[in-house]
Picture 1 (cartoon, rainbow, N blue to C red):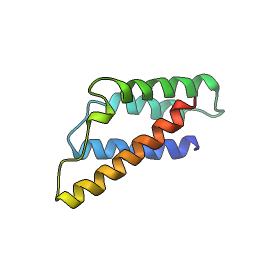
Picture 2: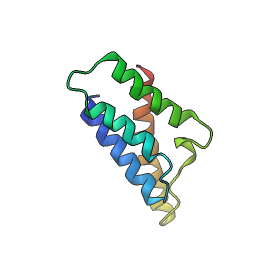
Picture 3: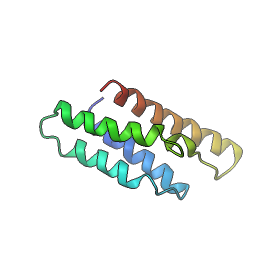
Picture 4: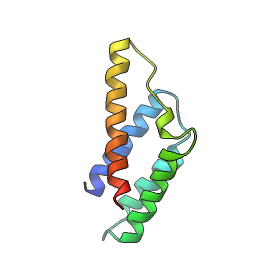
Length: 98
């Protein structure tokens, strides 16, 4: 997965969190986006920094995995949460390899 694709997924994740009025992860997500966006030449250190921030946000108590979509009909919630889980899993798989 390229840094551009990861940035798109992080932006989608942030958008979903905002729809649930969850803003507590913005600083971390923005930091990861900034690291990935500023990489003219991808370096191991930059990837490690981005991965470390993501893993901290995802694995901490009251982290990413504790947020779910609760708005809309039951079918809308299920679909939205499937999308949310897919994005989080894709990002976790990407950053755990670093």
